[in-house]
Image (cartoon, rainbow, N blue to C red):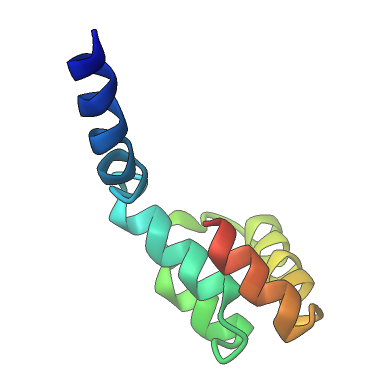
Length: 81
């Protein structure tokens, strides 16, 4: 039983640092948090998923929400991810 606990505790950090398993999702999150990426650059990075003007407007608004945040808030969001 103790061996099971030790193996579980040893494997937990590896599991937690493995990421989401979806590189596209991780790239989108990194681009949305990065204040150096403009709204147009962000939209261009996944243009294939934007099908109409309403979606494009929503993406612009979503990125603007992150651009308005302080560096401290963005760093905390990046650590959370």
